[in-house]
Image 1 (cartoon, rainbow, N blue to C red):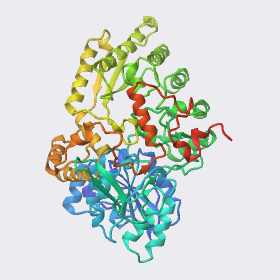
Image 2: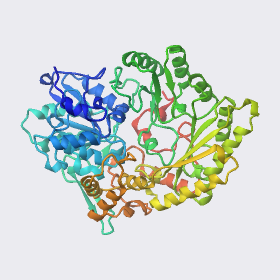
Image 3: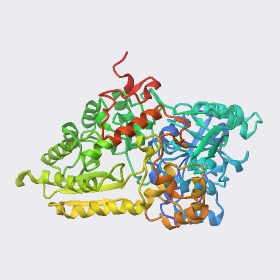
Image 4: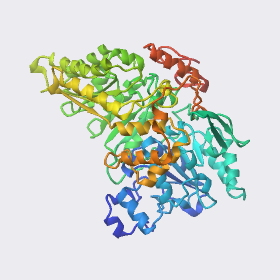
Length: 621
């Protein structure tokens, strides 16, 4: 019988002990003596959030289908257990076997958000693995990072042995095969990394040297090892229909953030919003076959007992078989207590019809993401949404019985004026006004319009990667302008306005576009006590300020200046398929307030066609 890493006394004295005991439905148990490779898959946040992540479920399933590999899971221990592990010197452990993470061959960490970077250091330290890759020996696992933040891995370069750039289903098998051949060969750790460097899509940061100009910008970035390529090409699964997918996802013991079956209907997005990194790095758009999705839905609901199924995609409305799929789900699971969740929908007649069939209209709210209040700003960001679209959609929703609407905006976008800011409140008011145009007897009580604004962060591989940010004070000043304008609106009693934390936004910006020097700040912040920085109750901005001061790194260098067209970026060695010249032309079109058609309307020659499939080849034989 499996022995738990934590005794009963510890488990009874920490919050949610089920986070740490493993043994969930569909978790995979193997005989560790009969496998060649042990892989600890980590999400650097608490169990409930990590268990909601589809990417880890996909890789967990894929790795465990191999007879020679056992993949287990590990999550960030919450602060109460963190304290116990340090006091009692208990090494961090994986859920399935309860064995120390340091006993594994690989520690794979998915990096989804910049504000989890200190949690990565927590995972390494609690696992008794040296923080710096340069300090690791044959006794340590290889630490490999994946996920969207690896499209600029440089702030974390010193802490990782390998970064996997792109979608995990492509070359992981090749890497594991190479590892097996190396493991019994007697070759050094460095020799394995040289073998890995020759696999397309793998980046070994120790094999590259950055050189800086006097002004702090990057002068050059080049390999220092003959086995390392000058450019690392992202990995893309072109046939998403037949790609590995978990028919039996692990079911958490406690309520996860997203406690449901997730159906990924497509990858990529045709829209080309200029602020959106995902819309650029996941090109080209690729759809899953609708019949395969129906098969997945039946199997996954049966194998999990979940009572909700969610369609996952960057823009579900753009999935060409959406009507057939949703109709099937409604008809197939009618009367079986299965809820259907439809995020990322454009609010049109079809979407509203579907939602009215799957939601309790009186309880639920609709979500629009205009992103900007004025049409001028929506053109700058290439949102492809007019005010008429927004008000027509809201009107149809109100006539259909809805009275609650959430509106999402961004503040601090490039070229933003005070007039653009005030238009956020005015547009929200016009949406409310549209509700009160309906005859009183047909209304569903009072309407509630909740507008939220996040603050803009320029991301690598977007047209806005050249753009400056604002200071935290300036972001807050802009939020106050919007708040003031909300108070001036006719329907202010029906309006509510929220905004995000500007201090977190500033840090996110530094890490999103940072170079290797930023790694010192992350490590110093961690040493000072920063942890779970994406959690409001844990975030301590004063410690981050201290970390910048202690390391002599100036956050304004990364955030407040507009980059020149020629500047070499820390992430330029990554080849995403989307060309830098295309991104630059989109930056110029943004400044000119010019809209670029979506990929189905017209190809804009971004470069993603070189992958040889998806939206770029739709309708071609």
